[in-house]
Image 1: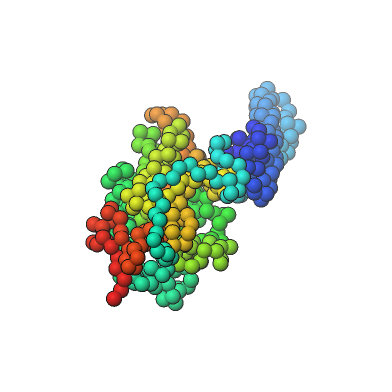
Image 2 (image 1 turned 90 degrees about the horizontal axis):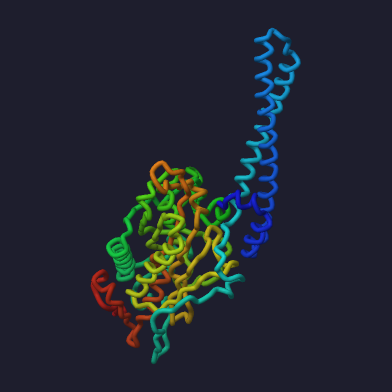
Length: 427
């Protein structure tokens, strides 16, 4: 969550900073925070003043008793002020609870350098690779998947519902190959610790990373246990160190996990629903880093480069977008989206999102570190990136690698994992 001290010290600056998100609801929540913090501070001052007066009165009562002087008036005053302090402390607790509830609904402050505006203002930072020119009409991945026997979307929908793909044969092998390739890349070359986390998490975990309370409608919930299927491995990975104080010498902590992910994506019905572009269950290798605040910016560049390396080895043309203020996610302070070119659908598809959250998640999850032995604990900075998400990566692999005869040539890096250099149409 945001640092309430920043709001208290300069509420106008906080409003101006949050206004960049172009989110009226967020500004309303901030308005509640400003007012509640004002009332909380005023109540706290009252309590402290009353406590100071009571301490002085108690000392005077003790003096009078020692001198055998009457103290009935002071005792009556102490009783009355005690009741007042008790009520004020109850009021203070209620204010703090309400303040925390509103703080949980206020998004992160953005870094100053990101562009203003909505999605149209997203800035292309760089591109990589050459967009292939075809001497035949490139086919979309759903046609290729059918002729190659890679997935069966109608039967997946029959088993569960729309947006739950069924991979078969070489398609299932391709999913497994991507998982092994990406985990090997990030653990062996980039130094991440491989983790196999639970796929169900509790409310505290989702609150810690910012999915709750705002995005509960996008989550799949197990009502009887009040547990949720993970929308991303970012949630369990980040929460491994929830409520811990880390040794600064152990930072950065870098973790990678391959998991399925589950998202309802409420409100996205009818948008990019054909094929694998928008699904409710998908596989992904996720990267998470816990770092010192003074290294946060360079760590963001590093984790982005790690995701880019995967796309480079897969020989997929891509571009890196720095998201504008109005398009940046709730918990993020700055996000780079990696979009791969998909010639069959004729567009750029997001296959990774690399974000720095500064101390926003760490405050919610209470993840701190000691910069030096015996030093006062500070909040870590958290970062994550998809390294990478599978469905749209598979879309790009199929559509970029397709040949006139209907086969798909695979990138060299995947050949040892798939066991072949190309996928062939079913006879």
